[in-house]
Image (cartoon, rainbow, N blue to C red; front, top):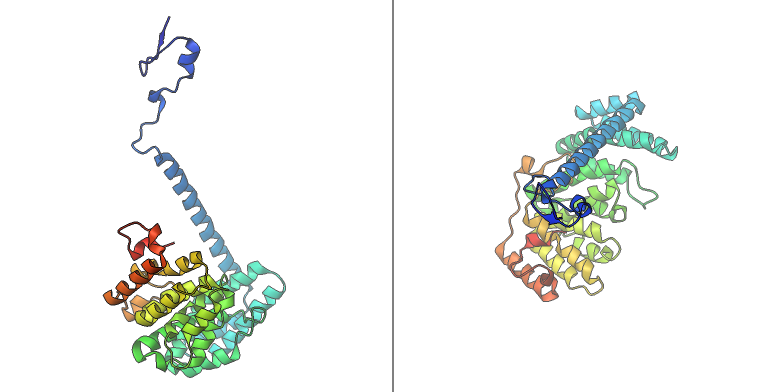
Length: 329
């Protein structure tokens, strides 16, 4: 005799089939079948975020406890505008980072780096704003990047202050007013991408079209070796001068030395720029807050870049009504 499911009304010839059938009534009542998974994923994400915040807090606490009183004192004096203290602070910061790095005590090394990163960069910036470029050029001369193996560990903090001042100078006085030493210094960190110093050097893009140093030539020289550093620099270059940056991007997109996929990766910078997302580098500094600066494409530049993208065939993967925003990786 047939057996009927009381829940859904479907009939079966045997009790076994009745018990094993996939009854729709057993499905959870939810408009979105993925909602429970989404909630689970969100809970995992929240837990990871909380764990990372806790680890960051513990790391900074370790750094503050391990740092010498001399470092803390000179940082405080530097923040109050004492130039000699600022130079002493950087020297002390470098020595203590080097001490723990060479011991391979990387937890303490990172703790000191991040605990003092923001206040040290702010102190250098304050002194540079008061004293001018001479102060920063002295730091550049004192802590040059010779190679990956001979890179001062305090470099990110110096780059941060240099980057802030490069941007200010460009927007307020023009690119020629930036000391060539500052542009060359930032450009020397291209092999450090993946490290903090490589990220802080992305403000090199603000030196585009400098009369004393060719950012375009340098990026074309290193693009096949460090694609993602060039990609990061390009977004800053567009903020600095979209016409010069468009010239550079077109040269890169038509360079047959560069693989097709890599050229598309470079073109994807247009998606980031088109959103007018404020650069996250230099760290702990807001371009919009200080200088009220926003980016907007010149329609002539937008048009010529669209033509280049279509000429190179990058648009084929984007759909008929593609926009720059569709190109984000």
